[in-house]
Image: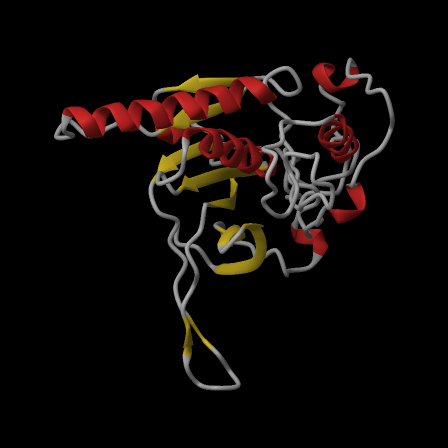
Length: 251
Protein backbone atom coordinates (compact mmCIF):
# COMPACT_ATOMS: atom_id res chain seq x y z
CA UNK A 1 0.00 0.00 0.00
CA UNK A 2 1.25 3.47 -0.84
CA UNK A 3 1.76 6.06 1.88
CA UNK A 4 -1.17 8.50 2.06
CA UNK A 5 0.51 11.40 3.78
CA UNK A 6 3.76 12.44 5.38
CA UNK A 7 4.03 14.70 8.42
CA UNK A 8 7.52 15.94 9.20
CA UNK A 9 9.02 17.75 12.20
CA UNK A 10 12.69 18.76 12.08
CA UNK A 11 14.61 18.75 15.36
CA UNK A 12 18.28 19.67 15.81
CA UNK A 13 20.39 16.75 17.01
CA UNK A 14 24.04 17.50 16.33
CA UNK A 15 25.86 20.60 15.11
CA UNK A 16 24.81 21.19 11.48
CA UNK A 17 23.32 17.70 11.52
CA UNK A 18 19.61 17.13 11.88
CA UNK A 19 17.78 14.24 13.49
CA UNK A 20 14.45 14.07 11.71
CA UNK A 21 11.29 12.40 12.97
CA UNK A 22 8.84 11.39 10.23
CA UNK A 23 5.33 10.00 10.50
CA UNK A 24 3.93 8.11 7.52
CA UNK A 25 0.30 7.04 7.29
CA UNK A 26 0.44 3.72 5.44
CA UNK A 27 -3.08 2.26 5.54
CA UNK A 28 -6.52 2.86 4.14
CA UNK A 29 -8.01 4.94 6.97
CA UNK A 30 -6.68 8.42 7.61
CA UNK A 31 -5.42 9.30 11.05
CA UNK A 32 -7.31 12.56 10.57
CA UNK A 33 -10.56 10.62 10.25
CA UNK A 34 -13.13 10.43 13.01
CA UNK A 35 -11.86 8.68 16.10
CA UNK A 36 -14.63 6.10 15.69
CA UNK A 37 -12.68 4.71 12.71
CA UNK A 38 -9.66 4.04 14.89
CA UNK A 39 -9.01 1.65 17.77
CA UNK A 40 -9.86 3.16 21.16
CA UNK A 41 -7.16 4.75 23.28
CA UNK A 42 -6.22 2.22 25.95
CA UNK A 43 -3.26 1.48 28.20
CA UNK A 44 -1.22 -1.69 27.73
CA UNK A 45 0.28 -3.52 30.71
CA UNK A 46 3.64 -2.04 31.64
CA UNK A 47 6.45 -4.30 30.36
CA UNK A 48 8.02 -6.26 33.21
CA UNK A 49 11.45 -4.78 32.47
CA UNK A 50 10.10 -1.27 33.08
CA UNK A 51 8.08 -2.43 36.08
CA UNK A 52 11.33 -3.54 37.65
CA UNK A 53 13.14 -0.27 36.90
CA UNK A 54 13.73 1.79 40.02
CA UNK A 55 15.63 4.99 39.40
CA UNK A 56 17.28 7.05 42.11
CA UNK A 57 14.90 9.90 41.25
CA UNK A 58 11.65 10.31 39.33
CA UNK A 59 13.10 13.07 37.13
CA UNK A 60 11.99 12.86 33.50
CA UNK A 61 11.25 14.99 30.43
CA UNK A 62 7.85 13.50 29.60
CA UNK A 63 6.45 16.98 28.85
CA UNK A 64 8.76 17.12 25.82
CA UNK A 65 7.28 13.97 24.26
CA UNK A 66 5.02 14.46 21.26
CA UNK A 67 1.79 12.44 21.33
CA UNK A 68 -0.04 11.59 18.11
CA UNK A 69 -3.65 10.94 17.22
CA UNK A 70 -2.63 7.27 17.26
CA UNK A 71 -1.53 7.80 20.86
CA UNK A 72 1.95 7.35 22.25
CA UNK A 73 4.19 5.41 19.86
CA UNK A 74 4.89 2.37 22.02
CA UNK A 75 5.24 -1.37 21.53
CA UNK A 76 2.90 -3.94 23.03
CA UNK A 77 4.42 -7.19 21.69
CA UNK A 78 7.83 -8.39 22.83
CA UNK A 79 10.62 -8.99 22.14
CA UNK A 80 10.79 -6.12 19.68
CA UNK A 81 12.28 -7.50 16.46
CA UNK A 82 15.18 -5.52 14.96
CA UNK A 83 16.64 -5.93 11.47
CA UNK A 84 20.20 -4.67 10.84
CA UNK A 85 21.20 -4.04 7.24
CA UNK A 86 23.72 -6.56 5.86
CA UNK A 87 26.65 -5.68 3.56
CA UNK A 88 26.60 -6.17 -0.20
CA UNK A 89 28.67 -9.00 -1.65
CA UNK A 90 30.69 -6.60 -3.83
CA UNK A 91 32.23 -4.57 -1.00
CA UNK A 92 36.00 -4.22 -0.90
CA UNK A 93 37.82 -5.63 2.15
CA UNK A 94 38.15 -2.10 3.55
CA UNK A 95 34.50 -1.37 2.86
CA UNK A 96 33.44 -4.63 4.52
CA UNK A 97 35.48 -3.75 7.61
CA UNK A 98 33.77 -0.36 7.82
CA UNK A 99 30.37 -1.98 7.43
CA UNK A 100 31.14 -4.49 10.17
CA UNK A 101 32.20 -1.65 12.48
CA UNK A 102 28.86 0.04 11.79
CA UNK A 103 27.04 -3.22 12.61
CA UNK A 104 29.04 -3.47 15.82
CA UNK A 105 27.90 0.05 16.78
CA UNK A 106 24.28 -0.93 16.12
CA UNK A 107 24.56 -4.04 18.30
CA UNK A 108 26.13 -2.08 21.14
CA UNK A 109 23.22 0.36 20.93
CA UNK A 110 20.67 -2.47 20.98
CA UNK A 111 22.33 -4.02 24.03
CA UNK A 112 22.25 -0.70 25.86
CA UNK A 113 18.42 -0.54 25.55
CA UNK A 114 17.83 -4.26 26.03
CA UNK A 115 17.66 -4.21 29.86
CA UNK A 116 14.71 -1.81 29.66
CA UNK A 117 12.76 -3.22 26.70
CA UNK A 118 13.58 -6.64 25.23
CA UNK A 119 14.93 -6.51 21.68
CA UNK A 120 16.02 -9.34 19.41
CA UNK A 121 17.95 -9.19 16.14
CA UNK A 122 16.34 -11.00 13.19
CA UNK A 123 17.56 -11.67 9.64
CA UNK A 124 14.41 -10.94 7.61
CA UNK A 125 13.48 -7.30 7.15
CA UNK A 126 9.82 -8.03 6.34
CA UNK A 127 9.34 -9.52 9.82
CA UNK A 128 10.98 -6.64 11.71
CA UNK A 129 9.45 -4.00 13.96
CA UNK A 130 12.52 -1.75 13.74
CA UNK A 131 14.77 -1.61 10.66
CA UNK A 132 18.22 0.01 10.80
CA UNK A 133 20.00 1.03 7.58
CA UNK A 134 23.52 2.25 6.87
CA UNK A 135 22.93 5.06 4.40
CA UNK A 136 22.54 8.78 4.09
CA UNK A 137 19.11 9.86 5.35
CA UNK A 138 17.08 11.19 2.46
CA UNK A 139 14.84 14.23 2.93
CA UNK A 140 13.58 16.04 -0.18
CA UNK A 141 14.07 19.74 -0.68
CA UNK A 142 10.97 21.87 -0.05
CA UNK A 143 9.84 25.15 -1.59
CA UNK A 144 9.97 28.14 0.74
CA UNK A 145 6.48 29.74 0.45
CA UNK A 146 7.92 33.22 1.13
CA UNK A 147 10.75 33.19 -1.43
CA UNK A 148 9.53 30.59 -3.92
CA UNK A 149 12.98 28.99 -3.74
CA UNK A 150 13.95 25.51 -2.63
CA UNK A 151 15.17 25.06 0.93
CA UNK A 152 17.94 22.51 0.59
CA UNK A 153 18.14 20.17 3.61
CA UNK A 154 21.32 20.09 5.65
CA UNK A 155 23.38 16.97 6.23
CA UNK A 156 21.80 14.64 8.75
CA UNK A 157 23.22 12.20 11.27
CA UNK A 158 20.11 10.03 11.24
CA UNK A 159 16.40 9.83 10.49
CA UNK A 160 13.69 7.87 12.28
CA UNK A 161 10.47 7.14 10.40
CA UNK A 162 7.29 5.60 11.78
CA UNK A 163 4.75 3.90 9.49
CA UNK A 164 1.28 2.85 10.60
CA UNK A 165 -0.56 -0.13 9.15
CA UNK A 166 -3.44 -2.48 9.85
CA UNK A 167 -2.74 -6.18 10.29
CA UNK A 168 -4.05 -8.28 7.41
CA UNK A 169 -5.65 -11.08 9.42
CA UNK A 170 -8.74 -10.23 11.49
CA UNK A 171 -9.28 -8.90 14.00
CA UNK A 172 -7.34 -6.03 12.43
CA UNK A 173 -5.00 -4.25 14.80
CA UNK A 174 -3.35 -0.88 14.35
CA UNK A 175 0.40 -1.49 14.35
CA UNK A 176 3.54 0.41 13.38
CA UNK A 177 7.10 -0.08 12.19
CA UNK A 178 10.12 2.15 12.72
CA UNK A 179 12.90 2.68 10.17
CA UNK A 180 16.22 4.26 11.11
CA UNK A 181 18.69 5.60 8.53
CA UNK A 182 22.17 6.35 9.85
CA UNK A 183 24.83 8.41 8.10
CA UNK A 184 27.86 6.07 8.21
CA UNK A 185 30.46 8.86 8.00
CA UNK A 186 30.90 9.35 11.75
CA UNK A 187 33.45 8.20 14.27
CA UNK A 188 32.65 4.95 16.06
CA UNK A 189 31.73 6.65 19.36
CA UNK A 190 29.37 9.05 17.60
CA UNK A 191 27.81 6.18 15.67
CA UNK A 192 27.04 4.37 18.92
CA UNK A 193 25.55 7.51 20.47
CA UNK A 194 23.54 8.49 17.40
CA UNK A 195 22.12 5.00 16.93
CA UNK A 196 21.31 4.73 20.64
CA UNK A 197 19.53 8.09 20.34
CA UNK A 198 17.54 6.95 17.31
CA UNK A 199 16.60 3.68 18.99
CA UNK A 200 15.21 5.78 21.83
CA UNK A 201 12.87 7.40 19.30
CA UNK A 202 11.99 4.02 17.81
CA UNK A 203 11.14 2.64 21.26
CA UNK A 204 8.69 5.47 21.88
CA UNK A 205 10.58 8.57 23.02
CA UNK A 206 9.16 10.78 20.25
CA UNK A 207 10.84 13.97 21.35
CA UNK A 208 14.02 15.25 22.96
CA UNK A 209 15.47 16.01 26.35
CA UNK A 210 16.80 19.46 27.26
CA UNK A 211 19.42 17.94 29.58
CA UNK A 212 22.93 17.37 28.22
CA UNK A 213 23.33 14.29 30.45
CA UNK A 214 20.60 12.36 28.59
CA UNK A 215 21.19 10.31 25.46
CA UNK A 216 17.98 11.87 24.09
CA UNK A 217 19.39 15.39 24.45
CA UNK A 218 18.30 17.47 21.47
CA UNK A 219 21.78 18.68 20.47
CA UNK A 220 25.37 17.45 20.49
CA UNK A 221 27.58 18.25 23.47
CA UNK A 222 31.31 17.67 24.06
CA UNK A 223 30.64 14.79 26.43
CA UNK A 224 29.06 11.82 24.66
CA UNK A 225 26.13 10.77 26.88
CA UNK A 226 24.89 7.28 27.65
CA UNK A 227 21.33 6.27 28.54
CA UNK A 228 20.48 8.10 31.77
CA UNK A 229 17.98 7.49 34.59
CA UNK A 230 15.96 10.40 33.17
CA UNK A 231 15.80 8.64 29.80
CA UNK A 232 14.44 5.48 31.44
CA UNK A 233 12.04 7.37 33.72
CA UNK A 234 10.66 9.07 30.60
CA UNK A 235 10.39 5.77 28.72
CA UNK A 236 8.57 4.19 31.67
CA UNK A 237 6.07 7.06 31.89
CA UNK A 238 5.43 6.84 28.13
CA UNK A 239 4.57 3.15 28.47
CA UNK A 240 1.98 4.03 31.11
CA UNK A 241 0.08 6.23 28.62
CA UNK A 242 -2.87 5.32 26.35
CA UNK A 243 -2.33 4.40 22.72
CA UNK A 244 -4.34 3.07 19.78
CA UNK A 245 -1.39 0.91 18.70
CA UNK A 246 -1.78 -2.78 19.35
CA UNK A 247 -5.57 -2.54 19.74
CA UNK A 248 -8.29 -3.79 17.40
CA UNK A 249 -9.97 -1.42 14.96
CA UNK A 250 -13.77 -1.18 15.48
CA UNK A 251 -15.78 -3.20 12.97
